[in-house]
Image (tube, rainbow, N blue to C red; front, side):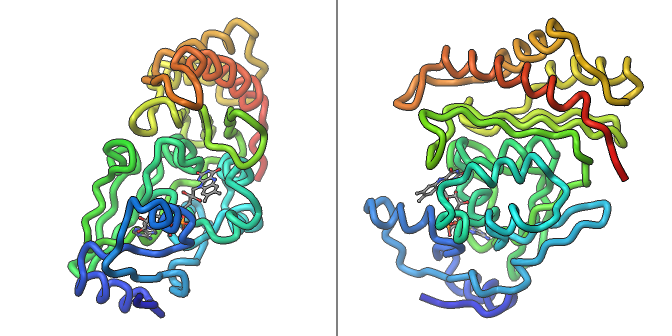
Length: 282
Ligand SMILES: Cc1cc2nc3c(=O)[nH]c(=O)nc-3n(C[C@H](O)[C@H](O)[C@H](O)COP(=O)(O)OP(=O)(O)OC[C@H]3O[C@@H](n4cnc5c(N)ncnc54)[C@H](O)[C@@H]3O)c2cc1C
């Protein structure tokens, strides 16, 4: 195992052995190894790379790939939805090790940070010894545990425009803690840019957006002049129903497609009722 001390060192190691497995927090990789689904011939540990642990907020928010979910609970990144998502990840021990970069690189449809990143229209920063590129999150994930990262690339950071406080993340599971989402939903209402973002998790092969629901909600926010308002019960229900139609769920051990659509409609209605009245401060 190669232990990288800085980003250049990590990129050089990855260039020397493209396809080597990257060890960040190890909470996904070690499970793959323990179950015999992966037998890495080379592992490059990046958990000591300080550059990957940086977090900054100055109009845009930039979170290094090595930032853990515990850090996302403790540090100011301006995304209450991401904080709510971080709170639901695993246990305190898992949150101390598991990183946002690992969540993005694993690209599970059940990754809890991912609906939030979709709703925020986040960008994924990738670097290799050949150079860097920035990929919108909506184009990054291509299928269950599949993405456009090349074998010699590292996810270095995730970036988004600070969207203000009107945002929420909700997750339904078979119990309250240590649970893989049956369905997850993030809603972001960016009052400054006049933008609504919805991200759906565990409801399709990738994280999905809900364009019809987003347009419907944008109409309601337009009507209110993007000021805080109390949406009617009917409007919330319609928003939830539009979200359910955007899903492409399957029946699996965690739940049926019909149940997933139902909980998405319920979460969607509640999310709009929670987010629309939130005032933008500062
Ligand atoms: C008990 C348990 C409970 C869990 N609960 C949840 C949960 O509630 N919600 C949830 O979303 N997830 C959960 N997970 C999954 C896991 O914790 C997350 O997906 C986590 O974000 C992975 O991050 P990591 O740093 O541990 O990744 P690692 O295991 O280090 O890496 C995961 C994969 O991504 C690659 N990788 C990591 N970082 C990079 C990088 N910077 N660039 C390129 N490739 C990289 C690795 O090579 C590996 O293939 C759980 C896992 C366990 C074991």
